[in-house]
Image 1 (spheres, rainbow, N blue to C red):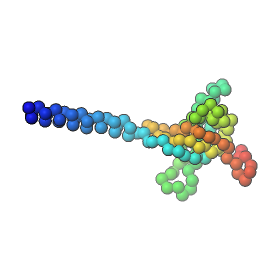
Image 2 (image 1 turned 120 degrees about the horizontal axis):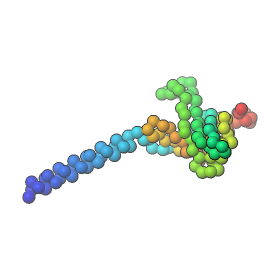
Image 3 (image 1 turned 90 degrees about the vertical axis):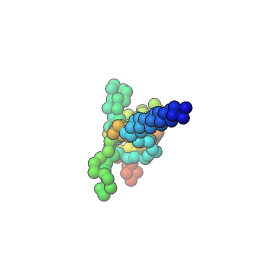
Length: 125
């Protein structure tokens, strides 16, 4: 009887270890979303009047540690109003507040708010 219980316990332990391994590898390429405030150049690709895709390119600042090239985020609006505002600001320097995440090497940004960046009270080109 004791031998049967030991075998069952070993099988259960092996099953738990296997499940832990599966879950850890499934989420290894995914980073948790975090609140951010990013500034960069917004490019919109449209299909008729609809926004097909939006990309925010954040320039690498000189002297930035661990940064050797510009970073591009695939942007989606939190709601229809934000998506419409994104479309209006195509080709402009913008500031976007939202949640950034990374999944399978792709950086994404869900925009809560977007506004055009102004320098000295003047809108950028």
